Image (cartoon, rainbow over all chains, first blue to last red; front, top):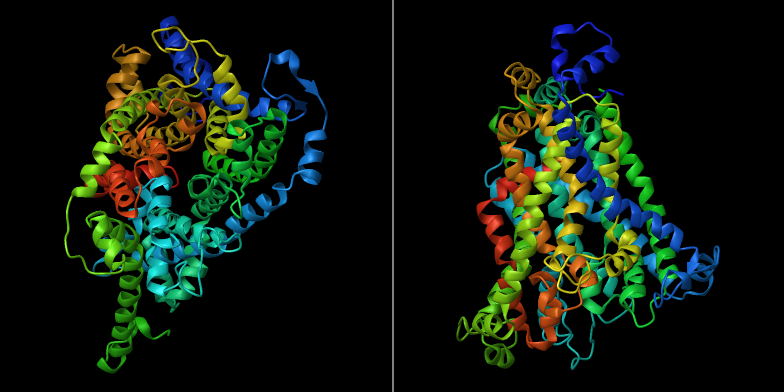
Length: 320
Length: 298
């Protein structure tokens, strides 16, 4: 499986893996084994109990009808009814799917490439690169709640700086309601979200670029490749592992999108998102556990793709 | 283009210098654009409401004062929520690093059949959107009992302990992944030497490996502090008593109730952001290495 070689194996470097493993564990005393078992058991229990069990329960409960009142015996099993209702009858579902898709496309096509592009520019030895990096990185330390508040100062209908500069406040003729207009607010929120995403991607990509063997670039330069050619034909391909990480992060972040929309209008009127539909079924007036779980399972199904992509990359590295 | 590297003549230098200048111009514009939202919030926070009401927000100030900060601090009871945040952040970060370092120690330093499987499981758990688990988790929190010294209502729900537990569980995967990558880079001979000296597994972990992992632990501690402090979601869903909210989740309630005008909202936002801004100015290197340790090896 490519697990790291045991520490006691050096004396018998040529021995087959299995006997190495046995000899390795044989030197452990009983209390050592108990220590090792406890070291694994406690974290594993937390992950299984608080993350994986609820994931499984989401899937199971999505086949049920339960309003959360009364005990577990009040649960009725209804098969795929929740999914049917979700897709056919629930008015917010398809808008939420569309908004999540737009979110993903916006991140994939604008925020993430911009972050990567800036990383490539800042990777060169230029004066003031620390300042530029810090400026772009600043929003990354802020919580999305604060990001939402700060951008409300910009987008607010009357007191927002944008409308005051453009003379489009509610008393003006060409009133623009950045956060209230359902065909506009998603884009306004995406700009705010990208403000943070760009810096995040930039920092990750910059670290990846720094790790690229400089002799590769030198060789490309000697062969007469232009900067652009060097990047696309030499650097980008060797950055494959980090490109995958960034792709995965971009998709996962788009699925997790919640805070900004929740802060701005609790995710209604143009800002519906799958994550918010899930939580509305918990803190809303009429909780419908099975139905909320069905939405969570949709989210899970989309998340499984990038998770497998990420794990297969990690597995490859592990095997090397 | 291909002659770039060899170009020495001054005739060829000038388009190159032009390119440099336009690169800087572009970067300066982008940087200023990126700084603008927070800089504007900072500027607004120093202006009394009367000033902006009379002149608009896009104007030069007649007075600057700390009045908004004073009001936000007092009216919204900021110290109370900051303390709540501290009660949540401190144990979460310490415990997650402790547990993750033990798990990472085992999977990176001992050959064990299920190493990779466990690492995969942990990583997958870390990548799930929190909303996937929130519905059953919410019901579990309402059903699971806790002893009175940990919970004043006997449940996980609406308790600091409950929030701390989910933070630990959710961040474990990432921290284990980062720490095991880091520990793999330490020489194998360290364990052998410890065994020769008759050290137990626990001594090897606590006296040999852990001290050498300090840079990664420090980086993760900074990153996790910011992430847990910044979390908005868990407390919003798993707590109901507004008084127990950590700072970031409380912010939304404070708005409308206490933060009535933009200037006060700006001051409140800056106040709440101060702990993370301290990290930005003082511990940026650790924060960034915490972030990037997970995506690049070593």
